[in-house]
Length: 306
Image (tube, rainbow, N blue to C red):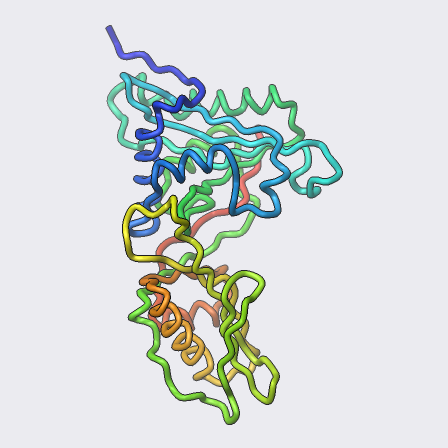
């Protein structure tokens, strides 16, 4: 008798297989990226990192496709209500937060149908929610994994078959080993001193001349929450980087040297950064000073069936 394929709601006993499915997708994008079971379960119930959009969510649903006792595909969906307190871009909409499936389930007609059967169930859930618009992303509970990265052509194909099209930007994700960042160097400008404060997005390391902030870098060192830690190493993110247009050529390496010193004290070994392809000067600066390109990820997927 051929193995059966079914799409059903997520059950708690699926947690280990679901975590594995998430982690194999994440690790193809960011080396060593991994989420704990607790992190995965927590992300299905709440959105602690989405401080703006998280409180707007009215309903959540997690669906899995099971074949021969194995979870071969899964998706997490949320609904934003038609409420004036919800941002206009999110109001009365349904979002596939992430949609994943194993690309290697070939040769078995039942398993090969899993992504399309799961997608049909996602769209049916949106119909039951009566949402005005439908959107998709690949936002996993792992730092640096969002949108549709180049490493997931099988996910992109499944979304495109269902009528999703990219409407947002493509971002380039970079990674640096902290020890590969420029070493701290003397100030390149007369009177320049470092200052460390709490910024909007993280720890702000500023270049200050005559009491005026001329440049800064903000580092988010809170990516590895306690429940997420299943291996050591530590990762941070360049949450913001601001340089004047006529910046001294040594100002960026000086800031990165300050970042290296601080991150070393924090026990952080790797630093993420992102940019859009049109930010050519920022990209060149990152590549010159220890960063490598990890991936390009396509953001903003809207459902526009033919």
